Length: 425
Image (cartoon, rainbow, N blue to C red; front, side):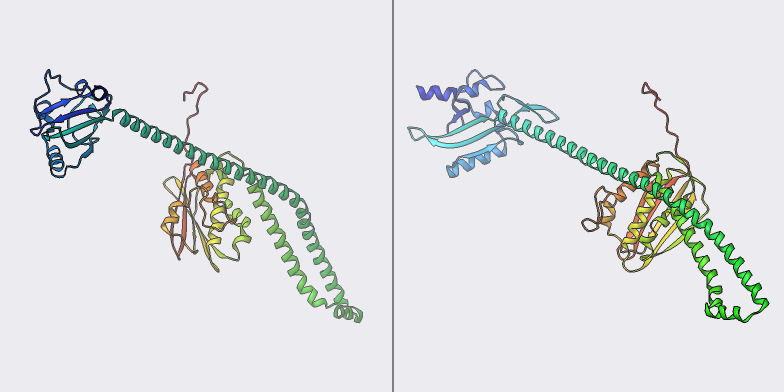
């Protein structure tokens, strides 16, 4: 009796079928979950109570069990039911709400009279399946949150690096401004004194020439002794070279001043060619032993931009171009304007890049340089600066041939509506 009671209240359904597939026994689990109540189940054909069993799957299972005597187990998760029982939970598959599938075990055995019988055990896995689905949803949600956090972390890392880079450039700008100021005053004295010295030299040479006309052996002996002819010829060249050196220093000072306002956020009309020339002066030492600079400048209008930031972009591209050249090559700078925008091209005869590298070249922290040689931020910052100017920067490259970066900038910045204090434009 205890065994019968246990079977009646076990957490699984149990059906016993005779050789004609009539129901010989079913426990309370089955009775409680019948979709349609049947007053009398015992003795009735299984297919009459559960018409859904008339399908190829059922007949294949029957054949296997009868021929081999081995039980067969199936989990009806995403296939039609073997028999339809109401379950503890429903599955919403987007089209219809249906009970969770059950696990089924079909087996054969003999009763005490050696009569062949079939057993059908049904396990309601709906709670487990539902918990599994909820776990999958939770894991999916957790992964999405992790991806969001990872993206935010990368953005924070980039913003921090850009802030450090901006602070570094601002510090360099302040240093450059100080150096330019400190050099400008003494170089001004040198330039002024050189001009005065040149006047004095001309006067002295004129005096010597006049004295030579009076004659005198002693004067000629002195000229010979101090190699007057050579000094007269050489002194003009020395003064000329000194003036050239002073002018070069003044150009460098001017370039330093242009770069001393890197933190400036104000848009203003800018002479792009003047900015390029200043940038070339700044990176001259980086380039002069690597490449010939070729300028193909067209006539372009003043550009509304943050000049020092555009100079920084051009500087990054020029330095990268020089570093990509093995031996000695060329870097060509082109400018032209059309349809309300200015285009700057920087083309080199360097080693070039593969398509895979070209796709990632503007990604933050991506670099092809050796460890310690680059941060991978130069082109990323350049991309952001150009984007801030409502422009675009592209690159085309062929391995072994070189690369060409193109910058397109609007001549006038688009008007951005002001946001009122209340949040309305």
